[in-house]
Image 1 (cartoon, protein in one colour):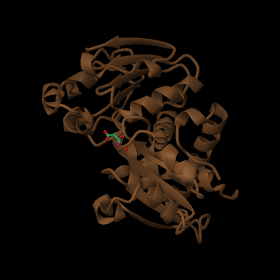
Image 2: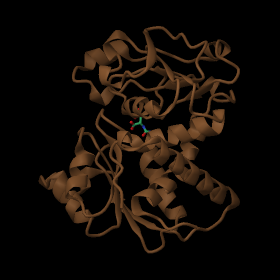
Image 3: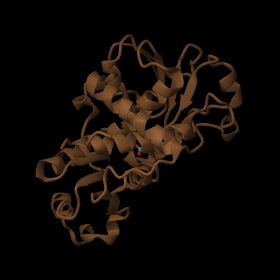
Length: 299
Ligand code: NCD
């Protein structure tokens, strides 16, 4: 049993093994193979915050492994509405299932859950802090598309202050050699200093010509305390077909999604824009993550 709380808890060796397993899962999906690896197991999906991809790809992953899923996507329909604490909800649901995937608006919620839960906790996002499973599928995507994770120039674009996917991805890259970051954000949404590692440059402009990976993010409206601040910053960057013309031929454009208007939909047909493929890779990656958490037997 292993909790998945912070990407910082995973070494390069751990990540390599996970990506290897995800690749095996991908080939099973592609062959339409029916797996029974999690037969008789139940996953609890506790989503205290909106989610489309994370929740549904976790569900799909568990189904593809032969397991079942219980849970909620709307905390208003649970005893939280009766003022039950998150800790008590987790302790209760853990009585019904073998592993829990959860998302919360509170930084540190998954860590807290892991301290009270008798079953493994998988962090599907805790406020603006971390989103480790997104990072695992981001790494998987980069590896599949570019064939390597060392020696890459990675541009992070958008809301680098509140974007938890950016925070976890920056941490993960400390495992790989010679990463160079280009942090592109408005002055008010700069990357917090604890995530700046190794070589980097910071800019407010879309200077992406030399980047191998362009990781675009949504301005995280729900994290702003002042709505007028959001109004000022929304729409600050927009990747268009003209932007794509300035990129390397082999660059990839990623986005954890959902997008608002930061990538023009006319870009979607460019083979370098891999964000829907990235979502697709969420299923095999999360199959591997569930196996890791539950110590799935080898096939
Ligand atoms: C991200 C998240 O929830 O942090 N979405 C996701 O999990 N794919 C990004 C976002 O909401 O902007």
